[in-house]
Length: 205
Image (cartoon, rainbow, N blue to C red):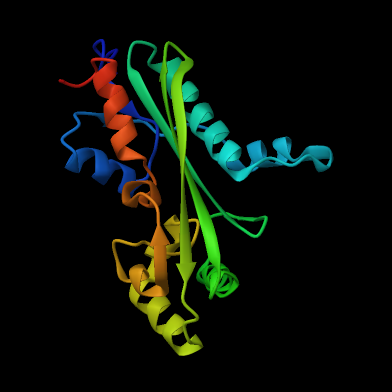
């Protein structure tokens, strides 16, 4: 593959949602998923009983993804992103099965959790900018019958989300209150990112 032209933009993610957000915003980009083992990063950071703040973890992962892809495309503006869900000190990852998705939603039912969404920009293999947005979401005390109906309707899409839901779909029915930036909840702090891309002359002013 030919080297990108200066100021070409690469999204270091395979997330369909992040791709849709950038495309809908009119950003000209290509995608190249980062080769970062998130589980290994988490285990390394929490080794020997160490603790890491959820927002810090999200930023570390976003930075790692951006740097990984930037090392392969040094002349491009590379965007890395990650999202961490926390609830009363417990961290939740993407469910590996529908059964795990059900357990996640039961654990979050009737409680307020936080979504920490991080984004980073790298160039020449180094992160040049990064930030984290945190949203607070309260799930209603839905019935077990509703949960079964929701999972049947949403299907395998829930496995792509750390909370087993997507607000842009039937997952919105799980909630009674949401405080935070909508785009960040979807997985990408879009307005700060666009502002930084404009400041770096990667997109027109």
